[in-house]
Length: 296
Image (cartoon, rainbow, N blue to C red; front, side):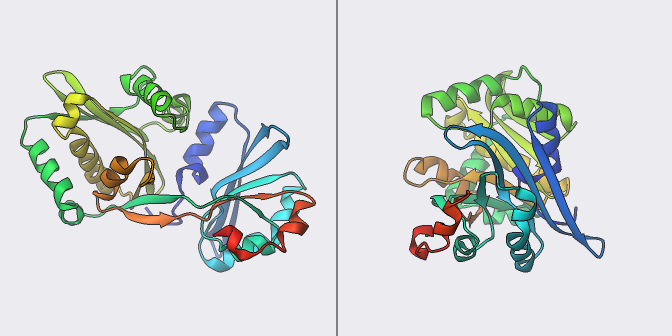
């Protein structure tokens, strides 16, 4: 797989899932010499106070910093004055301020796993993570891979877990739509013992990247390190399928330190996003005079 690395919200596969759910989304691409240079997907929705707004999540995706600058210099031509929320990735705050963007949220940090050969990935594992994986591999657990179905137990477990822990993620219905719109690209790795499920992890495949969309492990599964086994098995398979990066999502060392340690234990590299910004009418003129420290 070659070309730009498209995170899930900027991928063609995500666009197909949104279209299947009749969610408004537009994809805009720019090429030069037959090569991809710039791409962004725009979702539209209605928000309180602001009304209808456009949103670009983790974009635009650019081949080089100069392409990002080209986008900043021209986005208002297609944006037609509607409020724009930008979850930036790769554009320095000072340039966003100069273009009239107002900072809304500080940047999040992601855990991204480089997918290579199995030996290299195993060597990158943190020692405790690798020890747990070794124990799981020797304990007779069964790992299966299959496409996501609309009635799989993981979907209900994820909705229940999100409600109890108070976090927000893409709705399970979108994962089901992704599976239907992109056959073979929503894959589940499930760990079981004597027919009883211990853990499951859903990976969404999109271009050269893949995303860990959701996962759940039972109490018994934690004792047997079932999620370590599910995730590392998935990492090997995704690498063999040609994917170069696995996105494990955000890490939050303050509110979810255990989950952060688990993600980083895979040998994942941290990647800091550019924060969330708003471009809106008269605010743009004020934003251009904001001190840079507000965007830190």
